Length: 81
Image (tube, rainbow, N blue to C red; front, side, top):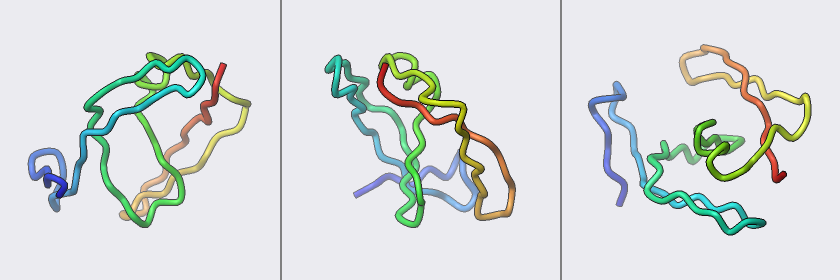
């Protein structure tokens, strides 16, 4: 069962500590806190985690992200080196 974070989120949001893995290098990062969103269209990971795993910007493509509150931001697409 996920833990709800009531310090960083209002209202409290479910977080899970996950292990991220680069399938090419087999490099892993453990216990990365991830927000659980069963309605999300994409999965986002921290940019620092992508860099540590050896993932590089895949193309000049970006995603426009729209939060539940209507706020917008852009995110780069990462892939394997």
